[in-house]
Length: 276
Image (cartoon, rainbow, N blue to C red; front, side, top):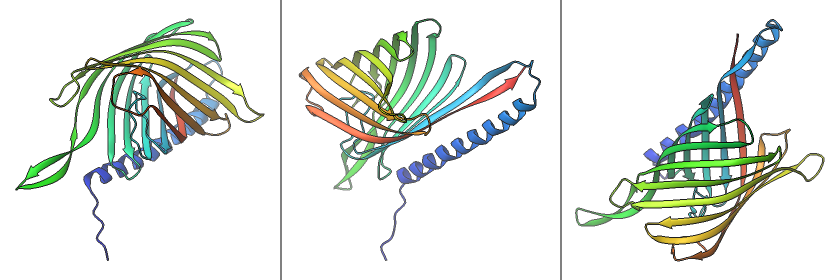
């Protein structure tokens, strides 16, 4: 019988997968508990959202990263969580190949600088940790090893709400490589739009998020178009997502001229409330 080797990366992947469903179950239980409590509370009491927890799990035929030019090139599983209170949120993201091998970890801290009115702005910072593979000479033998290049990233994302189904905005981030093998500096700037609740049928809705972006990687530059589309329903936490990235003009050698993916997304959001 073949021996199954349970590597640390697969163990970590299993832990994250377990934590995702544990958190979801816990949040669901807390929501039901709060609902029962608030039902028996006095009608004159004020209910305020104290803390919220949301997350998503996406399985796709091809993992596409924060910078759409960079794709995993194989099936992926991406976990994203948001824990927030008022304007501040912590948003860790864990991305894996479908076999459990880590692809990248992102640890976001975001703040809603302006969250009222039609014009709003978000700022944020994150530590990015993409994984790579290289050859290492050990005892006169070349072996494959996994390494991490760390990046410190700052972002700003202003946007204007035209109506409840349309908003337009911009996005910019600046990245600094912290390790010797990392790209020393990168810039990403985009003009984007979000169009939601396009009626496909009595049940299904369509959301479209196009963007036109500029990328600078250590002096190499490129311009690209990107489209994200989602088919969803208010009756289910599951949705279908489709992403398409196309080069317009570039001297960056990385990535394909045309790349895409399709995936299944599961989302949840729960709030923890207090009565005053």
